[in-house]
Image (tube, rainbow, N blue to C red; front, side, top):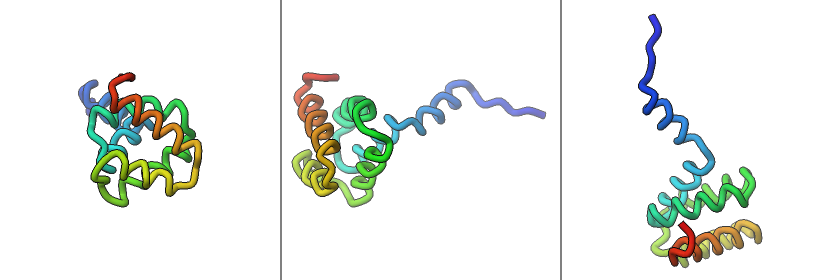
Length: 100
């Protein structure tokens, strides 16, 4: 006997494993507001490698930042100028509402 999952559940499970979804979840766990994190993740996955995204995701495990400045301070500690540039520009554009 075969069991089929509803298509909505299958799509939801598939979406959870995309780099954008993982990046968004990592940003939220690091203390970034959900709308800003969603905007940033969309930009970041097109500009950073998977290895860089993985390094960035480790910041969420270090605890929540109290604000965006503290988060960017932690990003600078990764010593990767490309990660810093992409994250800072994405944060600035998304937090100000210039990009959605």
